[in-house]
Amino acid sequence: MAGIYIHIPFCRKACHYCDFHFSTGLGAMEDMGLAICKELYQRKNFLANTPVSTIYFGGGTPSLLPKSILHSILDTVNNHFLVEKNVEISFEANPDDITKERLIEWMDTGINRLSIGIQSFQEADLAWMNRAHTADQSFQSINWVNEVGFTNYSIDLIYGSPALTDSAWEENLAFVVQHNIKHLSAYALTVEPRTALAKQIQQQKIADVDPDKQAKHFAILCAWANNHNYSHYEISNLAKEGYRSNHNANYWKGLPYLGVGPSAHSFDGKNRGWNISNNALYIQALKNNQNIYEEEKLTDTQRANEYIMTSIRTIEGLDLTHIQDLLGEAAISMILRSANKAIHNGLLQKEHNILTLTQAGKFLADGIAADLFL
Ligand code: SF4
Image (cartoon, rainbow, N blue to C red; front, top):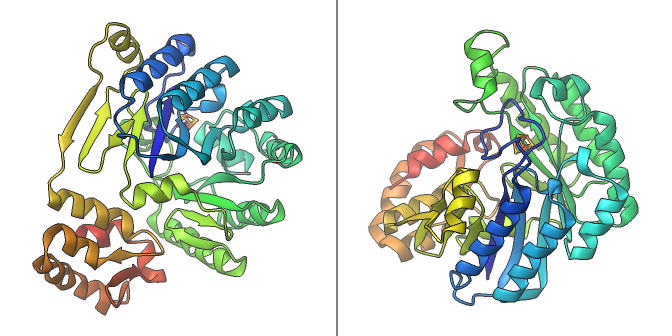
């Protein structure tokens, strides 16, 4: 099994916290569509005929794509890759782009999973983040998604922002239950360098992120998941039975994927690659048949560390036999030595050959994973 990721690098407005690759100049959309199709064609052998079980449109804002470009991209994928019949096709959409007509269009193309960038249902929080939509648009878009008949959809929420009170976070989560939303991606607000948010904090125009508040919001999230029967299957992802994201789960399992579009990353099982992060250069290079892609061969140790980083965040945990297959028995002893302190402190637990985070360890996942690196 393999996946295809398609990066659509355009946004209507720059959210203050965002460090993804995108441009707010929408003029190059047509050229970008052609360039992405050309890249798909040029790299049609990248997955070596491995069946494609997931396709993911991310960004940026895929919901800005005109229908004709969306069709061209999907036709190119279907014509040049071995796409499974029951492929999961996920599509990121922002509430301000969602109308009933567009939802029907998307459904007609074969898109069968939406990921809606809600981020918050609180007006003040949305304004603080500089989102392009209002809370009313979020509610309206969810109603339309249900009316049109998308059953498999997710929403994104951000917690721990200075503008979000504890009770407002609880209210956001309550809306998820009230609207019977089956999948939630919940992220702690992070201050990435070179974002407007980092600059505002540095200039003391706004308060910095409070780690205690983030830990509290994460604890509220964990309790909410337990109370409402959501499986917290990855640190930032929660789902009702049968509604997990296959695309993301395949990343965590280390399956190969092809990423197309500016800044997209790819992995063929051994090599990791990335595309140029510049829209104009990407389009130009593809027009001129020039290279847009760099790659590095991962050592077995790098592959093991990537596996540690992703697997420890999942409910299935880190399977030590996988590390043994890559690096031999000695690597397991090293990991277990490193894991001792976290196990002793009740942050990590070991059952047979599997290491998983405890509830207390989940919020510290990245630090615990770094301690286990080989
Ligand atoms: S819409 Fe998404 S990708 Fe675009 S700026 Fe906002 S968070 Fe970033």
